[in-house]
Amino acid sequence: MKAMRKVIMAILKVLTAVFVLTAPIYWFNLDTKIVKAIEKPMMKHYDEMKRDNRL
Image (cartoon, rainbow, N blue to C red; front, side, top):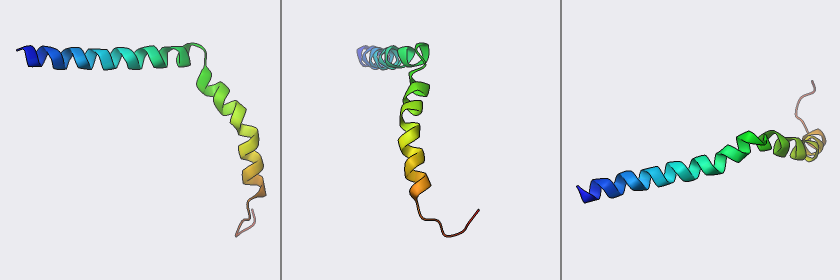
């Protein structure tokens, strides 16, 4: 019974940690801000790539 309790507590701790880490990302819309920050360098990289066929 104690082993089962330890497993449940470990799962709850992991879920709490995941929530604590992801809640600010959602709340402050950080995923979109990060993508916006790396969009310009990535577009420059893809624009400079050689292509086999023309569009």
